[in-house]
Length: 153
Image (cartoon, rainbow, N blue to C red; front, side, top):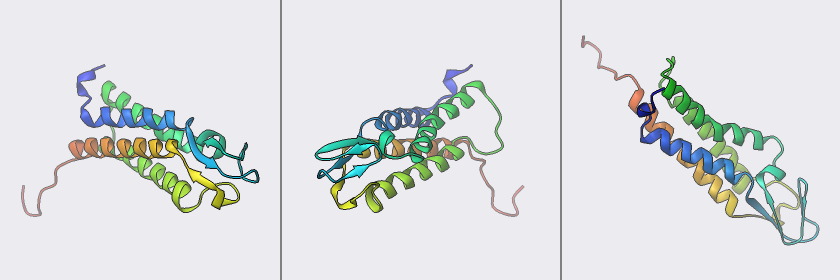
């Protein structure tokens, strides 16, 4: 195991994974009046974590939080991959960011949706997802094969 193989990209991605994992248990949504319901959370004037409010997406976000650790393990152990290191983690981070933005901005879960607001945990989760994406893109860029123009040996 060679920890010197880890570079700044992996460390940023692992930090982002830890932030995203912790944010799942923080308040992602606020509930307005007494008629507001979100998963197992009920209003008025309460908050609901991502873990309690999103039934399927919570597992996808948890997998995304663990993905940078798996990438770091692969790099530390020196395993060979058939794709540039960090590329799969970047794809997973893009999917998680899409789910996060969709659930926080476009279509908030629960009913009535007008009484559900975004809380600090959602912003922390978004920042964690962005850190995973940035770190894995840096790693994928460094480990990608350099291409030559046609006609060169």
